[in-house]
Structures are given as C-alpha cells and as structure tokens.
Figure (cartoon, helix red, strand yellow):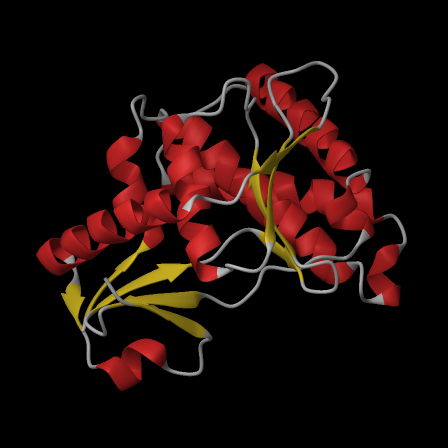
Length: 223
C-alpha cells in the first residue's frame, strides 16, 4: 500500500508559506492548548492551569527559537508572551476546552485497497460527533488549503459534523471564530478521492497494509 499524511497533499495548496517565527509560534500555541485539555482531566493540574500553560508556552517557545536558530530581543519576546497569554485565555473560554476534548488517534483513509491517507484533526468530540480543526489565524476568508484539509478529515469522519475554530493570535483582543463546514456533495467527495488516490500512488511510501493500519480506525473507499 502507498501511504501519505494528509498534510503532504494539503501543503501543495498553501499559497503563502509562513516564515520561521510564525511556524514556531503556531506549533507552540497548538501544543500548549492541546496539553491544557489533557491536564484539565487531572485534578492536581486543574488549578491555575492558565499560568501553568503560560509557563509551558514560554519554555517551548524558547526551546524552538534555539532549535531554529532564531534570535529575538527581550522586547520581541514580551510581545509573543503576551500573544500566548491572550491565546491561552481565549482557548480556555472555548467549547473545545469546556468539553475537555482531546486529539484523536490518527485514522487511515483507504482508497481502492492500495492508497492510504493518514488524517488527524485537532480535536474530536465523540459524544456530540463533532470534529474540530483549530487555527491561530483569522479564517475570514478561509484559505483554500484549510478547506481541502477539512474535506480530507470529513472522509475520515464521515458521520461527524465539521467545525473550524480559530483564535487570531495577532489581535489585541482575540475573538474566537467558529465556522461549521457543510458536508461534501457526493460528486465533490468522489473528485477529491480521485485526486488523493493519484497523488498518493505517485508520491506515497510503500508500507504493507497490516503495518499501515496497525490499531488505527480506518475507512474504505472504492472508486
């Protein structure tokens, strides 16, 4: 079986590549709030969780800056720390945090028993059957690559409602954006499956089917 990760396909549709500092910020913010949801289950961590998250973000940011050879002066660091604090507190008010949603295990979309695409949205609500993809930038308008990303996740979670949730980090006051994404028409879904199949067969890595699936949930599609 030929396999790829969803981002291998989606990355081809990103028109404007982020610079290094923005990529680092996005990664650190994403990992920080994902940890917040995990630790909110643990009573010993639930007190002062915003402060704990802020400390985690600051440590992670400094580690990533060193790793990526990015040098910032103290004034710039304070700006990013303030951004992180606003992001953390906006996230804490969201339905994703209040419902203690966690990141699901990667699912595998299998096409014609020969192409596999790994898909993993940011958060999944099994009780209400909603999947969320989170962004730290404004979704007005929604970039094309984000639309494609969600469409792939819809293939992996066909019975779930799809939502985009964004916390625009460059705002002085972060106003959360929540956008419900309509399910795809059958014609659109089939077209995407054909494109994914061709791309995966042309660019995927060879892995035997048993290893590719492992203990993951998977869904089969035939063209």
